[in-house]
Amino acid sequence: MARCWFMICLAFYIFLRIDFTMKINTSHPMSKPGKPDGEAGFSLLELMVVVVIMSILALVVMPRIIDRPDQARVARVQSDLAVLSGAVKLYKLDNFRYPSTEQGLLALREAPTIAPVPQNYASNGYIDRLPQDPWGNSYQYLQPGIHGEFDIFTLGADGVSGGDGVDADIGSWSE
Image 1 (cartoon, rainbow, N blue to C red):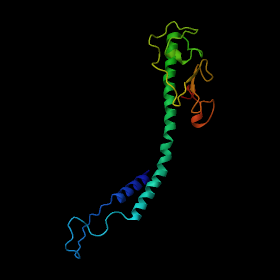
Image 2: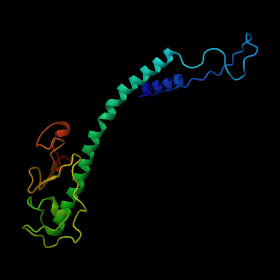
Image 3: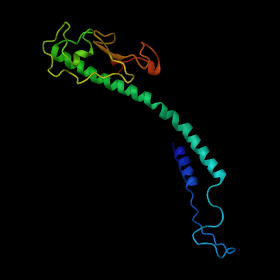
Image 4: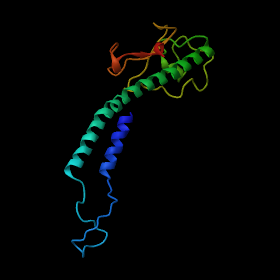
């Protein structure tokens, strides 16, 4: 990281170089004050050095930035799963049972009409809206679950069971 800052500072210095030394020119007594004689601007070599440094920085930084959206989507899934799991547990506290698989997560937003109909359903429901996973799919719900009393999960980016990386299933069991 220190190397990156050094290269950034070096590039910044070369790019915005200011020559504070005053040059006295005796060969042109009528030269206008305020305009330095000699070289003005950057040489081709200086510009090439800056371009090379910027390219190296891009090669180092870009892979780290590109991977961030996938990490953010997984973090959002984990946050959604925590909220949904909490709402399912509140449902059980009021109604002494979890919503059935047939009732699904919709039972958290509106009172179920499919048996078993809850007797002590909260008047405003247990969640304001049902979130979708970051890939636009609905979260899946199983009760009883394979990994616990209930499972809430997403099938990942590909929408198919299984997979690796961003295509992997993410569920309440992996919180």
